[in-house]
Each structure stands twice: as C-alpha cells, then as structure tokens.
Image (cartoon, rainbow, N blue to C red; front, top):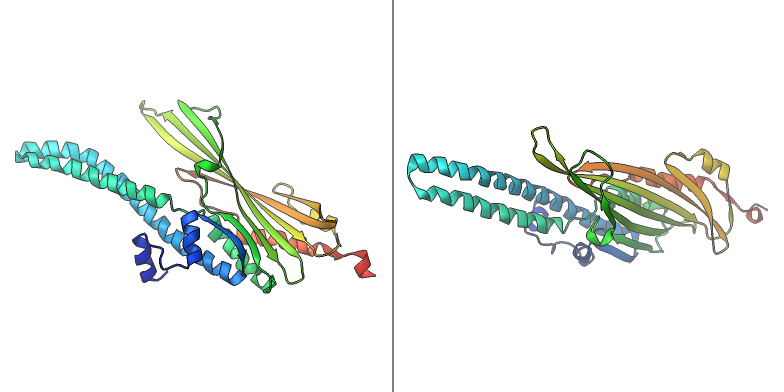
Length: 307
C-alpha cells in the first residue's frame, strides 16, 4: 500500500476506497452480482484496509497493555520519588498514564470492531485470481459474504468448559457460514464455492504454582470448504476417479441431483488453533481450487452426447 493510503487509513478514513468497498467496510459484508474484475478490485481494497487496520489494532493493544503496566509501576515510583524530591507533583504521573492507557484501550476496541475475517484475502481472493481465466466474462458472479468473523450474533452455544484442570471455565461456539460464491465457467458449467466455519472459544482460569489465578482464552477454528460443479446438461461422473483422488480423512464427495441434472460436490476440512486471539489462518486457496479441478477431471460426456 502507498504511503498516502496508509496515512489516510491511519486517520480512520475510508474515503480513498470505492463506494462498494466503503459499504463493505461499514457493514462488514459483501453481496450481490459482480463482474469478476470489479469483484477482485473491491476485494483488493478490502484487503488493503484490513491489513492496515490489523497493524493499527495490534499497535493500540500493545500501547494499552504497556501503559496499564506503567500506571501500576508509576504508583510505586511516585511514592519513592516523593520521598527523595519532597514534592506531591509526582502523583500527577499515575493518573496521566492511566488516562493514556484508557485512550489507547478505547482506540483498540474501536479498531477491533472494524476487523474483517482474514479468510477473504488469504483464501477467497487467491481462488478468484486463479480461476479468472476460466470464468465466462459475459456472466456475473453471485456473491454472499459475511466478513465480521466470530461476533455475538453468530453464537449458537454457551456451556461449561470440558473437564480439565480449571478453577472455572466457559466454552462458546460460533457458527459462521460466511461465504457462498457462484462462478459461471466458460464451458457453461456453474461452480459453487462455500465456506463454513465453526469457532470455539474456551475461557478458563487456572491456579498457578504460586497460588495466583491466571486466565487464558483458547480458540479452535474448524473450516469446511465445499465445491460443487453444476453442468448445464446431463453428464456422467467417474465416481471411481473421484474416490481415488479423495483423502477420506479430510474430504467427502457425493453426487447430488439439481433439477434433473446430476452434479458433483466435494468438501475438505481444516482445523486451526490459537491462544488469546482467534486464529488468522485460513484454508489454502490452491487446495480449494484443487477441489474444483478434481471434480472437473471426473466429468464425462453423457451417453447421448457420446453417441
């Protein structure tokens, strides 16, 4: 990103982006029918915004933690300084540090609310770039994306933590079907890519060796990418080829009937873990494209076409 864009983003403005990108940043969502070039461009703008916002969020968080620690140490420092200097003015230091800490914390929380799920820029955008030459330029892509990540409205369950060495604990589950994209291919086939994510947050408190209580947040992110090929007319599918190319530990494949036309669907599973913040990792784009390539390789002409 250019220095000019960084400077504007640092001030919290999105005016340098297109109206579509600004609306997506405001709503943390992207929907509608898109030309592929326009969609890739808008996703690029969102990626630029999200990268800068992540750096600013991390910076504000670091300063907030450091200033709260400095406030605590400043109380003892002021007491010692008053003994040597004999002035009560040194007691202005702790409240000043506390005010700065609260300001940075407020800044961090504001930036955190603007955060977008990383998967769209680390997975979906590379997928669209790889498939761009295979898309029908005369047709539009149908897009539905929720970029907010694991927010409260997606929480589906809250329960006590699983058994463990905890004083107390609570587990939260978030269901996030965050993306569906319909891609018209040049051969008339429609490819559908869907991403479902389950976020599991575990908040626990433990007692350390010295008797102090420590709190920790653990995350588990379970991702499913689902690719479906929908031919324009009846075809045969080489099921033996599909089964041979599938990893049964991580993948599933099945044939589904859509309005009398047999379609093929393959899905793959990934799991990521994190401490403190939700995992930023996402399914690799090349593996998602691989799902479509394997499906396409198993597509055979129908008996009528062959005759």
